[in-house]
Length: 217
Image (cartoon, rainbow, N blue to C red):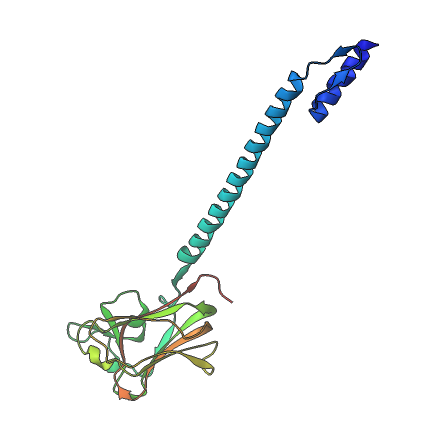
């Protein structure tokens, strides 16, 4: 009978980790105390592991967010279809200059230049092919002289050429080879980006870059 009581006492001890005294003899409580200390250490280690896993999860989310913000934004205007108000000289080279076709403004080569005639309100626009959430527009001014011709510029964005809204205005005048960066006054989406001068002037652009996430609408 005492053996049965002893076995039951051992089971209860390991469940409750309590000090137990049995009628007819004392049960050794050191086993329960040892179990209690071990259980406490396990709890501490489990808590540390949970905190470490939570920290690793946050770090992983931050890395993914950084990758999304940096690697997916690109120049969506590169080598896309474009038009300008006129084509100076109807030529692709002028003396030592590679000028003046409309596609020279978004061919990825800043040594080439698009150029219009001396127009009233000259313009250049690009069809991005899809609607994008535009992050910024960058312009590299003509690199072979006459940089002052870039002035009073409106940069507009829209889903069609008939519904363009102002992104930014540049008073100028520009400098030869100048790299200009424009952030819209508010979040804008569009398929078309247009660069136009308000007044009578030549519009000469070495490069127009439109930066947006790769995903499109």
